[in-house]
Amino acid sequence: MTIQLNPPKLYLSAPHACPYIEPETATTVLLDPNYKVDNALFSVLLNSGFRRSGKTIYRPHCRNCKACVSVKIPANAYLPNRAQIRCYKKNQDLHTTMVPTSFKQEHFELYCRYQSWRHSGDTMDHNDSDRYHEFVVKSLIETVFMEYRLKGKLIGLSVCDLPDDGMSAVYTFFDPDFSKRSLGTFAIMKQIEYVRQIQMDWLYLGYWIEGCKKMSYKTNFKPMFGFVNQAWRPM
Image (cartoon, rainbow, N blue to C red; front, side, top):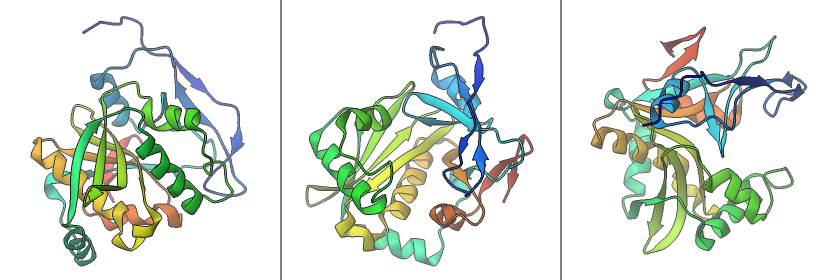
């Protein structure tokens, strides 16, 4: 392991429109993109409320708003509710496999279908393979894809980072034709299952904002901890 004596530099972004709360303005702390990040450092950053998107590691840093809360699930304490148990049983016919990150046309086509369905008309709705590669395939640390297949057909994929203390769910996309299977919920349950199998502690779920419908599913997983006032607290 290479020892770096200089601490990583952090940069503050210019103010920009908040993607979650209108008409708020947001700012973001960004890690120096040229700093070499290993799994140990990434684990420290995750536990300090940071997140990864492509090769960018960041944390919200808004002067007048603290709505974004980094959340994580203690895998060994997690207890599924009735709806989650039904979801898991419904998807028992799926074959789940972890594969190395790489560009595959099959993955890309599924991603494009999902974005056109879930994000129609916004900046995520595109079929640009270069942007897909930057967002989904590129990573600074150890990352895997978790595939979900039905009779060999790819119907879902999760991008997952592997910090030292568990797993971090980066992004999940799936075939809109199978939306009734609640594959987003099933993916989280399979990720919790993996963390238990490797005898680690945490599944990181990124940010949660109270009142944001797109993020409300996260609080259906109990127990859950949130990074509030520089400390992890039960939610």
